[in-house]
Image (tube, rainbow, N blue to C red; front, side, top):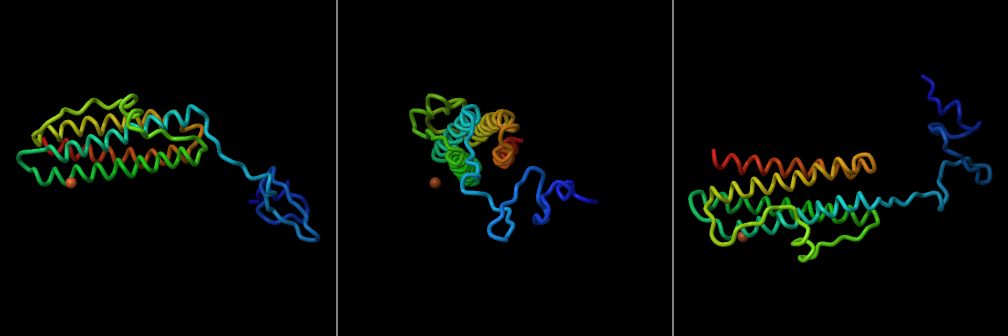
Length: 188
Ligand SMILES: [Fe+2]
């Protein structure tokens, strides 16, 4: 099959030229290279960066609550759950870093300060003091699903504008929901 570009391309243009692309002649050489001024800089809309900022604060809060649980959990199956909670903390920390750096790559500033997290997180508060293992597994299940819900909402909001960001959120949703299943399995 003949690619439409082959029809539209300028005579003598390099193969694979797409519709709308131009060619430049440097001396006797035809090139597809962009000019310095023809390289797009990706900048996100406030709606996109706002959705990602909400994801960021919920991931930071999840990391903090995971550590609170890791330190205060007691009871049967303590050691397994104690270690499993650090897996959740690692997931939340790494995901927060990924999302924050995506916001920066899209040209906006991030706000990961504790005051901002406390003021804007959507996660339920975590109880103070020692908590038994069954309670902790239930608390973490809820908070992992709450965080995943924030990511799912953000994914729906950003999907049309920026598919690469939606892909990034997909991977994090998968990790969070896997951890949530593991927490629920503790109490069956
Ligand atoms: Fe520890």
